[in-house]
Length: 65
Image 1: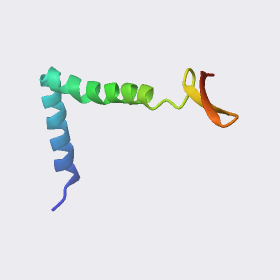
Image 2: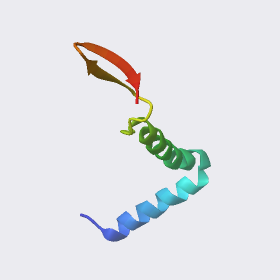
Image 3: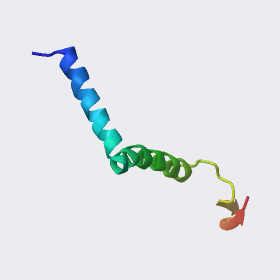
């Protein structure tokens, strides 16, 4: 049978455990934040400095925009 009091008690117990183990708590916060930052830079759709092909009379000329 489901009980809100038991769920609350279990959540409080787990939060107390997280406070005791600083390394695990830091990893729980640090790893997702690092992923957000790294993927934010990796998935950048701004084409500054990309080399783009330009068609000129039947041949491709590469030049930076």
